[in-house]
Each structure stands twice: as C-alpha cells, then as structure tokens.
Image (tube, rainbow, N blue to C red; front, top):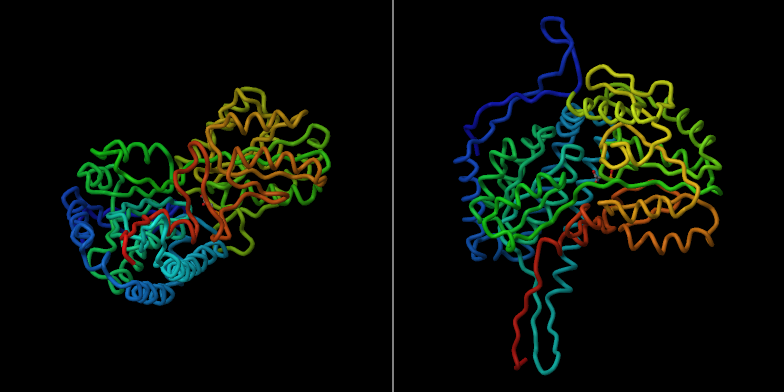
Amino acid sequence: RKWKGTMTEVYSSIHTENDKGEYGPTLLGSIPYMSEPEALEALDAACEAYDKGQGLWPTMKIADRVACMEKFVEEMKTKREEVVKLLMWEIGKNLPDSRKEFDRTVEYIYDTIEDYKQLDRDSAKFEKHGGVYAHIRRGPLGVVLCLGPYNYPLNETFALLIPAIIMGNTTLFKPAKHGVLLMSPLMEAFQKCFPKGVVNILYGRGRLVAGPVMKTGRIDVLALIGNSKSAVALQDQHPHKNRLRLVLSLEAKNPAIVLPDTDLDLAVEECILGTLSYNGQRCTALKIVYVHEDIVEEFNRRYTQGVDALKFGNPWEDGVKLTPLPEPGISDYIQELIDDALAKGAKIINEKGGERSENYIFPAVLYPVNKEMRVFEEEQFGPVVPILPFKSIEEPLDDVADSNYGQQVSLFGRDIKTLAPLIDRLVNLVCRVNINSSCQRGPDVYPFTGRKDSAASTLSVHDALRSFSIRTFVASKDN
Ligand code: G3H
C-alpha cells in the first residue's frame, strides 16, 4: 500500500561528505509520515481483518497461519543484505552486530513457529475436573499496537510483532524514528505473505499516529519496548484503560556487583562488554558498577585501560566497537550527566573519556560516583559508566532494593558460599541474576522481563506467545 503522507527525510548518525564538500549527517532516504486520517485508515484495516474475532486471520487454521509465517521468513531472508546495510547506517550499529541482529531475528521467527505448533498441541486437549469436561484452547486478544525501540529496530520490534501475529491477532506497528527505513523492504514481504489488514505500519511521530489510534479505544493490546514515559502517555489516551492489555519492556539500571575475591580479568572483560556494547545503548546494559573498596583501584586501572583500547569509528570498519550515537541530542544528555557528576566531585578516570565531536563521544568512566549525582539514578542509555566503591555488600543490595527498576544484576565472585545467599536475595529483587557474566536478554528462549518500572508481562520465544493470547475453553458436563 502506498501511503501519501508527508515525505520526511531520514538521516544517518554517520557523518559523510556531501556534494558541497561539507561533513554532516548522511541523507539516507525519505519516509511518508502519515496524517491522522491515514493512521486511522490503517487502524480500520486491522479492525476489519480481526472483525471482532470472526475475521479470516483469527479464525484461520493453525497450519495455514504457520504457512504464512514460513513463507514470510523465507522472503525476509532474501532481504538480508539490504536490511543489514540499512541497520548499520540508520542506527550506527557495527557490521557484525547488525548481521547478528538480523540472523537472531530469523532464528526467533523459526523458534516461534516451532513453539507455536507445540503450544497448539499442548493447548488443544480435553480435561475433566469435578465432573466438568473442558476443551482448552488458546485464542487471540484482538488488535495489537506494537512500538519498537531504535537500538534493536528489527529484533525487538519483531519480538513483539511476530508472536502477536502468529497467535491470530491483527497488528499495527510503529517503527522507531531511527531504524524506520529498514522496515520498507520487510513491509513488502509482509504484504506478500499475509492476508490484507493483518500487518499494518504506522509511519510518523508516535504522538501524531499512535496517539490518535489509542484515543479510539479500539486497541486491545499495547506492546511497547522503550521508555515508560511513552508507554504511560499512550495508555492514558485509551478511553478504557483498564481493558487494555500491556506487554511492556521499559527502563533498567542493571548493576554489576564485584566482590573482593573476584577473578578480576574476567570481571573487567564482562563489565566492558556489559557497559559498552553498542555504546551502552541497550536496556540490558550494565549501567552502574559497584566494586569492593579493596580491589577498586586495580579494577579501575584494568577497566579504563580496556575501555580506552576499544576502537571507535564508523560501523563498517573492521574491529570497531564504539560508534556515533543516533543523534546529537543523545550526546548532549550524556554530556549533562558527565558535567553534573564532575561538578559533584567525580572524575573522568580514563584518558580518552568524554572526547567529543557532536554525536561522536568517547565513553567517560566516572569515579567515585555517589547518590547525589544524576548518573546514579537516571538510565543513561549511552557511553558513560559510573563506578561506586562499597565496603559492605549491604550497600549495593540496598540500592538494588530501593531502585525504581528490577530487570537484572551481574554478580562477580568466586566463593559459592558467599554467592549463594546473595543470589537468593537478588532473585527476589530482579528477574535474572547473572553470575560472573554481564547482563543480556538472550538466548531468546529465556524469559525476558523485569520488576517495578522495568516491565509488564514477559517476552521470550515461549512467553510472548502466551503474552499475546488468552486461554479459553469450552465446558460441558458431557464428554
Ligand atoms: O535494549 C534492550 C535489549 O533487549 C537488549 O538486548 O541483551 O540482547 O543486547 P540484548
């Protein structure tokens, strides 16, 4: 479908030379930003395809829905080179990680198909309790609005969209501002493989396209990976908020806690990976590092040496780990956090820390950080690392308990007798405790969720199918 929209230019965070010989953000293409009536037309298409549960898609045989998804994934694979290139240019993710994101998504779709078939085998069964026979089924929820983040514009958007579709829901999805162009080739594949109205794209600013759609009250599920401000704003626009199902993955401030008996080389290596993969722009990134006071000096020495050795450059260059941020505004925010911490007594302890030219900013390692500093509390989502020394383990544990977030923790240490009781405490504060390794979402079969402000509902190959469906059953006193 060709939307008229207002053609809006999309720029890359990567600076190149233009026709006039000047360096600046690279123009990649244009997207037809939709008007409100066009967004509502897309909603109509999704509602018609669902047709109050009577539509072709929600009533289609499982095997036929699987066939559509299988056709789609084969079609998607033919677009790998194009999508990977756009991923790299649109969000500045390095080439190996851009390829990984694509391949992980393909894998995710295959695994979802298999899990869906298994779910169907498990669900479609008869049970008898207290003289009542039941035929249990799993059914769709309705019309789902999906919004994905810029840091995994493909993988995370699809981690919502694919399970929502295969469960028989119809969908609208709004790609992130950065990572929108790569959806164009994939939309072609969706249109080729699914009946009309099952997958609908919303191009444009969230406020202008997703907002009006929510206001109609015709959305049954809000699925969003991003920040809680956007999630709350969208929920608030729904006239029957209590009816709205939520599948949300939001902010986190995952800490690393490094105990005195730690294998320091391992902890440093994992902390570098955890804090700075994709410049720290991951919800699972380690965003605060607590190190026991007995080893903090040595930890800082090795950690900063490792950080300064990371190669900074454009994403297609060999061995590049650090890349430009998607827009200068993000670097300004990182700069604010750095300036605030410096004014309150922290120092940048790595030689290259904070070197900057617009959206090219080298990670700053801040030490010692305290609770008065903004970087202690706020989710930085970028290249600045706060390190805090601690004397008693109760200090980081109290902070984890008091935090607004509760996604994951990384715990580093050798002695299992020390670690075991800490693990028991931490699993009741967060949803995943990583021992001697950095935090991460994958492998995608494991539940991905969080406590407090970090999430609502659970994602993973297995869980997402359940998050986007409901168990229903037909009951009878006769078998
Ligand atoms: O932004 C949050 C992502 O879910 C992180 O995923 O741990 O696979 O990098 P990841």
